[in-house]
Amino acid sequence: MMLWKRMKKAGACLLSAAVLIGTIQYPSLQAAAKEGNAAQSAVATASSSEESYGRGPDKLNDGIADDSSNRWAMENTGSSAWVQYAWSTPQKMKSFRIIWERRTAKSYQLEISDDGSSWRRISSVLETPEKTTVEITLDEIRTAKYLRLHVTSIDDREIDGMAYQSISILEFEVYGADLPDPDAEHAQQIDASLTGIDKILADLDAPVIAKGDQKIYMPEIDGAAVRFCADYEQVIGEDGTIYPPLEDKTVRGFYEITSKESKESVKSDEYTIVVPGEYDSPGENKKPDVIPALQEWHGGTGNFILSRKGRILFDTPELLKTAEEFSRDYKLPAWILPCPAGKNQMPGPEISACSLQKKRADLDGKVTEPACLLLL
Image (cartoon, rainbow, N blue to C red; front, side, top):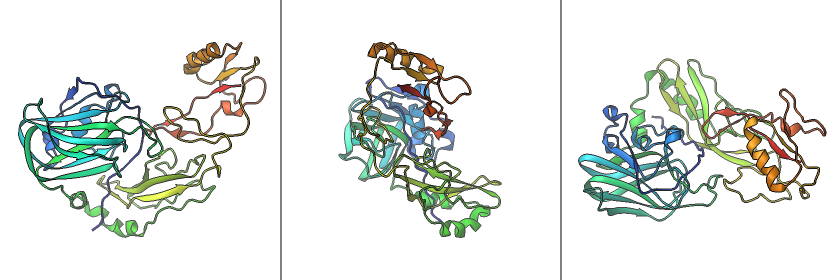
């Protein structure tokens, strides 16, 4: 029987500080609640939420755990946060599954209450998770009407290539008995049309990428669509396209094969892949410490010194305000000149960087053309 793997995508978002007044939303999939998962019949609230981005508390218990864009997230960065479930009647609780979007919870605890005001701690974790999926099983069953996941400390270090002091969760599951085996659950759902793919999955190995490669191996299967799901889709796209990073980058991902007829999907083992970078070293000038942290960096040589002949160039109207702020801050008679439409350089010395040719997928999977602002 083939094993099914949960999708893990990384991804990053703007993160948020906890506030005392929580938001409240009702789950949209109560009627189709996953058997045994009491969370899907609960009302979810949170210390704060990125409501404007559709990342409210209802995402905590909607049963969707394999889509990083479908998640709850704090509104701002901060040092603590909480999410809470409430039921109309007391619930039995023994095991829990937390699927973090990123491993930034430095310490957290599970708390229960009978009235939503007085809380009793039933579990405590004092270290950053080793994986994005954390499973907790109590020694005995507890019964309560309220459950709270309280993150008491948020890691501000760079983790998995990013440094965001915030919390985001894809799914928070609650069970009255031991945790169900997700592999066994999904295996029972495999459509007969996909059983012939077992051998193809068994023969797949982790892609090996050499410097200069433009695409990883993508199997071709009649009647099925194949994609590669990477935690850094801006480095390896779903179609296998490689977007070379500046330095060597470690990417985790797996193949997903979907039947075009039944729409059922199966997944390969998760692979760890090293994608060669364009440079062998970070360069002479060290990576600057900024917030949010730079994902990639290659430093050249020498020092950049603004002169009275300095100019500020930008290629999108949205950067006008930023360019004007630079001009005021540096007190320069700088020229604010937008890049002419359809041209690759500004008047004067050639500036090929003003028109960025590489398209990269952003953290939510959308393909964008980066904006460019240069100080010369």
